[in-house]
Picture 1 (cartoon, helix red, strand yellow):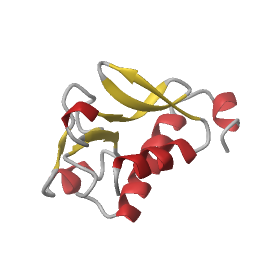
Picture 2 (tube, helix red, strand yellow; picture 1 turned 90 degrees about the vertical axis):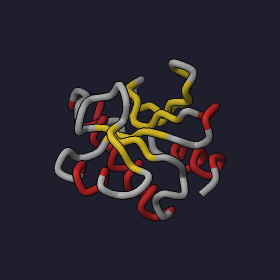
Picture 3 (tube, helix red, strand yellow; picture 1 turned 120 degrees about the vertical axis):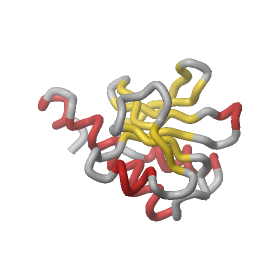
Picture 4 (cartoon, rainbow, N blue to C red; picture 1 turned 45 degrees about the vertical axis):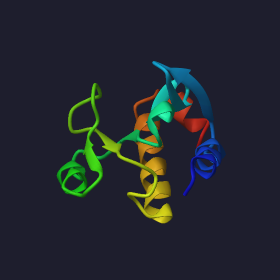
Length: 112
């Protein structure tokens, strides 16, 4: 998947907005980040992950603990080719769902 297709996919998820923070492109729901991309450094990006999946994911080539983000809850993926398109979309949707789940129930209801 190329960066433009990735961007289009993220923006297709309900309630998603994009913006720049810390010189990184971010995809957010209700101003809470669920994908952060270092666009000036290739297509390296970070997403939230289920802590139960963390060890298996970081054991794979091209995936590591995300720097400066909650330990064992965020992974950094070296580029968009590390995961298949299907898995990439699934992981991004899961990241969004985990961030959404932390928001108030009334807010969550807007996106169900």
